[in-house]
Image 1 (cartoon, rainbow, N blue to C red):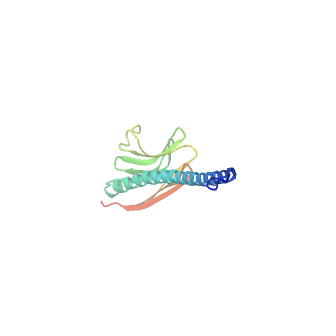
Image 2: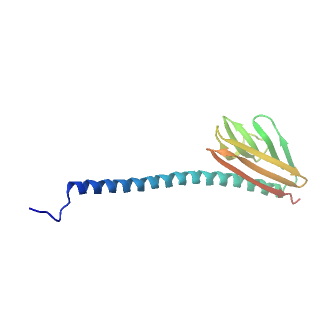
Image 3: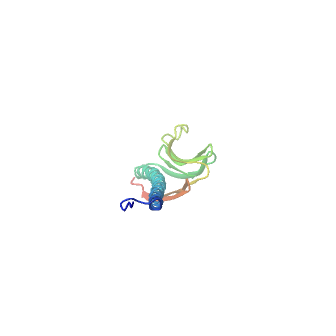
Length: 157
């Protein structure tokens, strides 16, 4: 008896092996796409937070009657931007470095965290004041993703 329309066992095994390789290739491509999406999502979130903080500082500097760039000791790190009654700077707490805004510098417990960088990352606020102009630069790394955002803004008053 001859079965010309049927598959042999060897043909079935070869077909299953080829199909398995194709499925594994598709799964690997999806996995790579998901990891890139996750990294891009983290990076976008970091840049959005930093840009938000930078824009907030720019808006405050534009309309500031009083403006000062200064440094302070612990728990602050590096330079601070004092605009009227508000304060922007890097606040260190529990191993985290936070870019913060104090709406009222007389009340340091009322901090608005703009960007929080956990231990293992880095965060620097660099400020340069030249008359009415202030150059603002926020840079560092969070989750091994580097960021660097800068701007120069001029006081209108």
